Length: 280
Image (cartoon, rainbow, N blue to C red; front, side, top):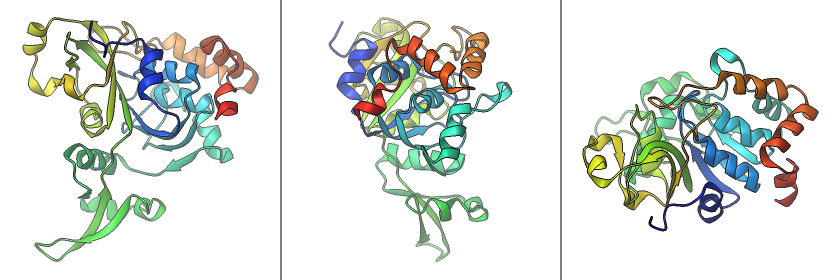
């Protein structure tokens, strides 16, 4: 296969530098790129700013639990019906993790701007009813509509240094197909300076060509492809497998206390979970 096909640890080492702005795809507990996120944690890669979709779970909670995130830009991190994200909450409450407050609509608009090469985008009027522009002034500015003269808020375009996504398939040329509802993942892909994608399987170019254009991401945008069947577990991937609720509950139980969390992380990484924080 071409050089862009790498193992997860190789892709992280080559394309995910410490201190970068890293976007992780997936929505809720679906299609989280856990093979790549786990490789980051095992490698001790520190994230300067972690950007998530409008709703994230373990793909954000895990690097935070490992102490490898400086700040996070995310409307929500949690486990839906299974409860809150315990280490995310603890890190925010203790001041160890800075939250860049942003709502779902503004995040999507920021990614639209980044994907289109636009420096900023006007926000819908509803953001005026929130305090988000006030608490995140680095993201928002007042602008005047050149057509009507009305004023409103605009949000800066967002271009992650690296985006990590999960997709269904890749062909030999590195083209990938999501094979599912895209959430904000496609926008994250188009906005990224570098894109690393884990896939469930490989297919030939003929099968890829049969995919709908809106389902695919062209290979020239993809920095690396990691073939990782089951790589989203314990989150789900539509059409391939459901979430592993037992594994998620095991993590949530372990995360209740520092000593059990440390043991869980050590089992995951095969090393001291504090390594990343010490090395950075």
